Length: 548
Image (tube, rainbow, N blue to C red; front, side):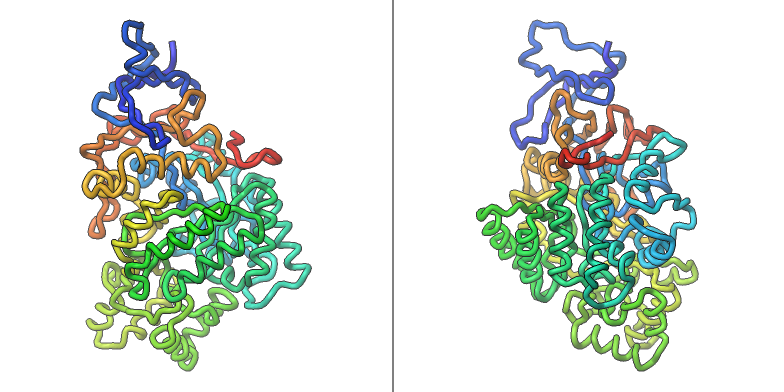
């Protein structure tokens, strides 16, 4: 008798091929048998200790969130329904060049301060780790040794590595500092990271020149990983920024995965096809490239990220000191509103597109859900005055929605042959971006069923087998015998994102069952107490694989 048989499911197996009706048997965390309806005619059907009636439901591999910011959420919230309820069974964290390993005591304090807006300050977390390997071990331990809600793979954050090796200075590294960064990246790869990320509009990662990034990418490529940059611009100069990353990784011999590959701001309206042409030329010439996107137009980040890079040199305390100084604050305003700060992708900021989504100080809650322009108009002051006051009062912890995207570009890019899904979901704040709770159901409901931008089979492949292949996982991403039983059952006629900009924490509908490692994490649409997730490591000397 086996553990579980999923009976009469419409299997969309992740290959992109036609669906088929089958019974799927799960035992010991793996798919042990798939009996298609045609083959079962006249034969005894598989039996198990437990049966799950999947009539009318699609069975697919679990979804892989290629761009997640759950670095602390996985250790803070055993429920983690924001992702589990969407059918996500694996998240890739350590994104945008800033996360919590590798660190020393000084760097840990600095990075906690720098990304408070993404993950909270972490006062509720016991930071027992310092290395990448220790962080992955902590994820394995999870809650009382039982694990975490979903599986997690980790990218070494290049900005944190730079912070650890040479602080927050805007300069080239010395040979000794570069050697240390190489060693930190090599250590992290040996300890199980799947690649390296960068945030090249965030300090201190943005201070790295191409030669420095190329040297680090060489190390990543040598260890079988990939480079995942938030590149230098998604606005003015976006295509040049993409070209830079393609050229850099090809020189380094390192696969490239483009994070949240959008074309934003007015200067890029209707230019999604130009990006894809650039990528197609490189792919046809042998480049190894993938990308991820979220199915929404607004972006999400921190308010402090909008500042020019020179204003951020030295870290959070130096930023606050510059904001306190009247003359320096005026220089910052001029760069943001007139010149176009690199933090705002080289485009002069439009305050009516900057909506405050979260604050760390509850006294500042009236700002949430309003644009900076709206709050400034209510106070009868210039928007920079409002923004500066908020930055100082919230000690740089405020998060924003940035309404600068274009639906045409979103649809164009998601059709591409190397596209995968990533939520880029920030889970903190009173009014987070709905993508954190809705990305995968939004793909299936809006872009498959309602708009027909993708077929169901094609979309599932984008969300499962393609990301698994990028991660080098040979036993995930497909409904196939011997593969891990990370699975989702959803109703193709009703699946939809419940989250909206007005109610961003609403869970999706039409996803009644989710299995993580063969155990039901969602059953009859409700979260169980199962904590079957673990760290998914790149095995040393074997290329990326699951070392569980």
